[in-house]
Length: 309
Picture 1: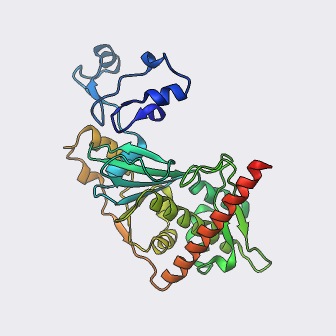
Picture 2: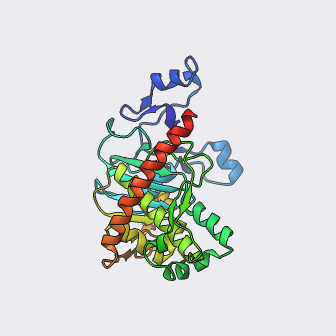
Picture 3: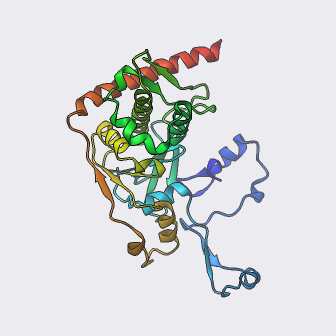
């Protein structure tokens, strides 16, 4: 229902409904709960069929991004969460719905009903690593050692990580966006290509976080957060210590949204680890990030030219 919702009022937007050609069909839309997470007793017939008590409560559960933010402990305004999954989702906690700035991304109600999340979900995250691993015939378990065998800057190999055939949706919308790999020569190694892809994902994450208004701490979650060498690159690019969220933070968040007093939270959560930036490479990565943003801007101009051809 998100495309039809006015998050400022918590109601459907008549303008959005009309823009989608759905005027006159509002009666088919489900009612919007005033609560961030809707809960109700299980229907007696369903409870009987499943062998459950008739007073069993069912929770809708929050959307996966707010659930992950709640499970990861994202509470302070300006703090960010980066979910390194198949896509690269950047979330920032905000106090209110903004109507200025970029028109891309999502504004989501926090699962604990305390403020909102400004989300910039890029199209490609670990899918880019899947692609390069298949291309180079390496295993995902080799990622850490490959990164260790290539120096900062990947021996001049540069990547724009727009590998999705659908283009990109954050921090800009461009269906013609495509990945680019430049700087290759006979001295480039598979490790250089892998590092260049990882560096590009870190640059894309920073660009998305900044577009979402990130100004505080940063936590990471998702399958891509398991490789320390990659997280060190990310922390150095962001110039911030990176806190690694507990495993299954999305599931933990869904549980907490259903029952904020859940006493099982502490037992199910590990102590988060923190990855520090590599201070010796910080200035290098800041320059490389500026170069990356310039390359993105130049590519966007080319894509616009392609649109006119």
